[in-house]
Image 1 (cartoon, rainbow, N blue to C red):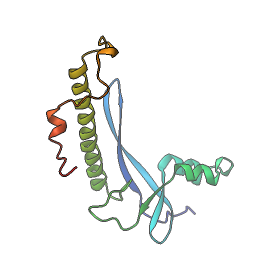
Image 2: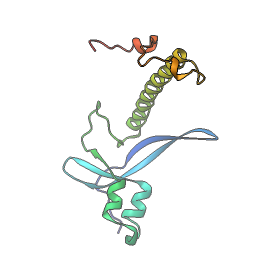
Image 3: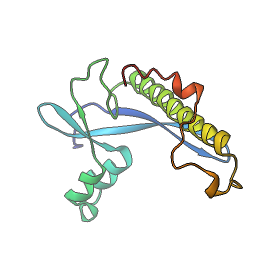
Image 4: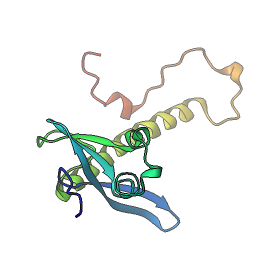
Length: 147
């Protein structure tokens, strides 16, 4: 008789880069335990190896390091590590990528402003001030409010 999982499988999209380009993969996370308010998830491979596999390789601390905890009652505006349906998992992946673009753009604009002001690596350190305010249109338009 096969053990039944206490909760639904959850999904998460992740990406990796390699010589072929960007590879987007759907990961399956298995709910192996529960509390009143949350599910404990293990990746499908960890679940097979640690929970259902040979017990000689399983220790509570090794499972604890790899598990994830998600709320049972997820609201539409809430963020989670993984979702019980693929549509919300894909939406979460797209939102994470949008944040990645924002963070990368800010880092790129900071670097461009600094290089534009100080020049390349051939600038002598004795010629630079101790403090410099470098105007950057992108950074100034970020909506600083009453900062």
